[in-house]
Image 1 (cartoon, rainbow, N blue to C red):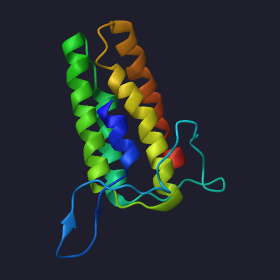
Image 2 (image 1 turned 180 degrees about the vertical axis):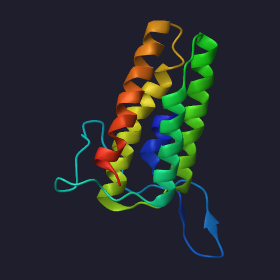
Image 3 (image 1 turned 90 degrees about the vertical axis):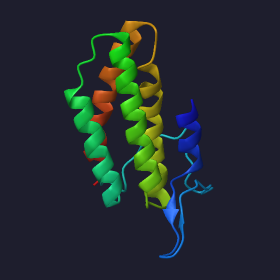
Image 4 (image 1 turned 30 degrees about the vertical axis):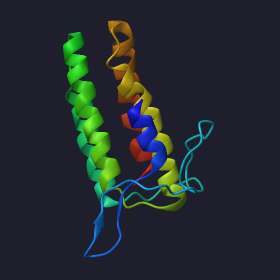
Length: 143
């Protein structure tokens, strides 16, 4: 749940060469509402910054190779994916509508990441399947 709150806050940005603000601050125009839907940019993928694309490649590779077999394995994967999302957010330099769309996408992922820690194995398995499907869609929405 903390991850969803973090996602609604916004990404950190470097403000100048001498002072890097690593705290999260609110971009009122980039926070996605609960009813917001992921969409394309006039039929094309949104431009994502290099650090976001790099972070998503790492997260997607982790999902592709993950084969958890126990609740502890799913919990470990959940922690690793949460770390990946936190890193993406911390290094994000995106702004405007593309930034808002990224937060919609990450919000969709976050609910499934949270579900990996479910005490019910079938819920964790379903969450992993949904995460893999979302992961496969990243390049359709962002470049």
